[in-house]
Image (tube, rainbow, N blue to C red):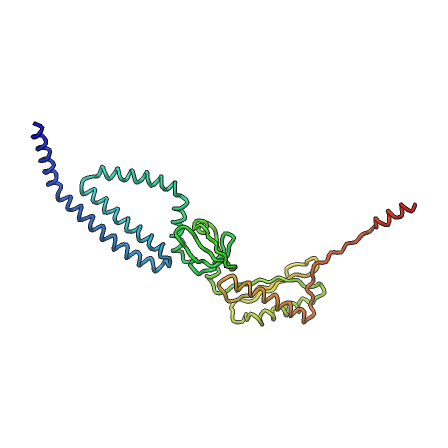
Length: 290
């Protein structure tokens, strides 16, 4: 009886295998097609992303993700072909729970990775741009999957999380080819203010040709200071980073100082005068004499 029962089971398995053979063959075909299709998708996506993203690690990550999606779709189709919908539901449930646990555990890392991918596709920030963000200013050296690298003017390297760049505002000096420079100064109260304005604008235009730039130079007297009448002059230079701005401001200060000295225009410095109405030492001496 036991032998006959075993034989019946084997026959039943054989019959089931024969019935399921077309589905098995179809499932194998689907898996093979999914594999080769994923390779094609990987290469195509990598080629397309490379045109938009200069960082190869980001491009490969996006291409691998696309290939995994294709393989996953092929796996789900295969399970349906084999009538394993129950197994498919179990896998989806397990994947959902595992994804939730992993997402909570790696929330910061995944956030930085996603932010890095988004930053790689943004047109207003690229490698080589000079930006200012999160209290730092420098050249963008790298946009990686987890961090953002800046090189400051003093050659220090600053590494920032991608999330902080995406969530905070930043100033990109490289988006335009012109930078406006502002210089403030003060002259004494007995100065000829019209002459000061004319001399300042002529000096700036002499060393920073403003005629070749469409935007006009601006000169304003700002306030009556404690020891001077203060003014502000704003002019434009060609540049895409903060270094030319610092150099232009330094040169403007030097040239304005030279021009004022030549024209006998005084740039005063604060002076504090102390006045005593009563002399306490004299009072004490008088009391002692008595």
